[in-house]
Length: 376
Image: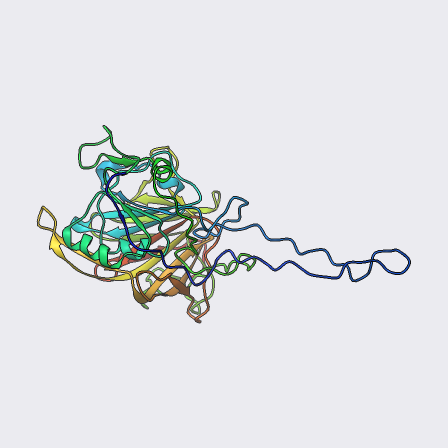
């Protein structure tokens, strides 16, 4: 079944995102006159389960459904990519040469075809370890593969070219033409029923989601020049955000009230999937990260940055047309990530898909735009 590496047993998540309410218990019987007893209480119905990666309520949701984490290229020459529009989560990370690459995460739905599939980076271990059953990429530099072997979450199947469903296409020139049939890979691989609680710590399914509120402060604590004044932590409507990973990679997200989601652009060019659907997200989580030298150069001699996604830092959650500054913590690569507001209270994302932007503190920029009618 191709190049597959099994690492002993997967760590069980401490927090279960699909906790069920206890059914009510009561005495059943009749009074002396034959009428039903007043003590009879109907059982409390069990709530519909939610998908752990998105918080979406569905009768089909199951924490044990396989989770697939796949590296997907984002070089301008391969856009539009296949399958991004149905991902539960997408992580955007800086790689060499100023371009970005995606770590895509699927559980509730799988695209027919996904790609182009490309190589792995150190940070992908922190993304895959808390959730993945299958971790798929095209290969990687020797230092990165060595790091993965020593740090990836236990029980994850690592799969590279030659695995079921991996195939070359005529869409692009090699090495940009490796694609994946996700359902073929899962159907022809070892079965797994290991439950997941998701990448982010979420509240219980019956708890209301906290609507992120906006603020005027930036993730690094500095003020945004165009931000309206107001107390820290109060809700602020935001119309969009411009991100700068490098001079050549500056994605934007714009709130669409009509669609009820954030829509993505590359610079000012709208982003679409190969299916023709616009790339969108219910939640955009901006995580400010430290970067280090990965310890090797690419074939062109470029420095390869290593994004560090453990420890703690600052960021911003964009949801429901609003922004909220947050702090994030992730103790180790196998840990879930916890988000908290400026008062230290846990933040639960709105139900729906999530894009996570890993914007480096060194050289990365985050600039918000606000509605013209909003008071300064």
